[in-house]
Amino acid sequence: MDHPGHGFNVGTESYEWRPAGGAAASRRRRLSARGPYQAALPAQIAELPVVVSPALQAEAEDAVREITRFDAEVTTLAARRAAEAGVDAAIELAPLASVLLRTESASSSEIEGVTAGARALALAAIEAKAGANAQLVTANVTAMQRAVELADEISIDSIRAAHEALLAGHEYAAPGRFRTAQVWIGTNAISPHTASFVPPHHSLVEAAMADLIRFVARADLPVLVQCATAHAQFETIHPFNDGNGRVGRTLIHAMLRHSDVTRRLTVPVSAGLLADTAAYFRALTDYRDGDVEPIVQRFADASFHAVGNGRQLVEELEQVYDSWSDRLSSRRGSAARRLLPHLLNQPALTVGRIETTAGVALSAAQRAVEQLEDAEILTRVSAGKRNRVWLAQEVIDALDAFAERVGRRG
Image (cartoon, rainbow, N blue to C red; front, top):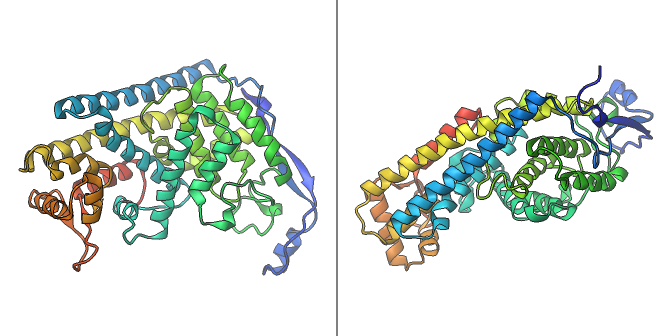
């Protein structure tokens, strides 16, 4: 049967397979990897109409309004706090914006099986000892920042820049460069013949991405419908050796910012997708079969889920901040007080980081740590006399609670 948006149906093309030598496999698997294989041939979507049911379009538009409202709520909250403290509103907004960006990056990474808890991410951000996953998630934060910064002009170059930020130093992934070989998706598939999905031949990637960029530039489509469709098309093209899912989700945020749906925040939409990854992956498959509605539905559901959890996280962080303000005895304007907003965004600190962040001498930084420890805001977590690290455990707890609500593991 035909579906709304059936013009997006993905075809196939046959290619000769030239296996790399030396791969160990059973005779049966080697035989199954012989002969031509079929690779996806995505539709050209630059000018295609995107038709969804009126009910789904209304739901998607409600989701966009909810994202915009959340962005405005947090911005207003920061402005009020800034007025009370007599500082620039951007100073109060920056920690909340950063922590939401980090939760989005962590959720997007978890969809790809890259998991890191709030404590590990905080330590990685100050280059303290942290595992490989925490470092990858930290790189995803940088990639997300790069994509949003370049949202005024979403282009092949800006997508490549996000990929380069994500996978810098991982040469197997060719950071910032489109793939030059066939890739495929499928557990234990030694060739494209038995893969669950075979993206387009690498010779088609450049043209397919140029077509996608023209689609992204359109102004005649409902925003979330356009975002979901563009994301599904990106995942179908699979333009990079690795990191396609994470870069494809940065594209969503660049489009939301480009469309003025968000102005200050990165709403953790990936956290909403993470709530049901099986449905998300099924929706991508449905898109390749010509049905665009399931991926739009997933993005609408994810947006409502993300805003609900985002509001709860912001509320919990505000309660933590108020509690700190009450417990800290140091005067207004002291280094310790100036560090409180910073701790919401980066709950791990060293004395050296305090010197840089607060712009104070070593003695003042050490005094600030003592005051924050006395108020039970910071807890020392490293032994020894050198390279000491302190954590704001209440922030870690709030971030872990957010992760638990969305099904993320630490």
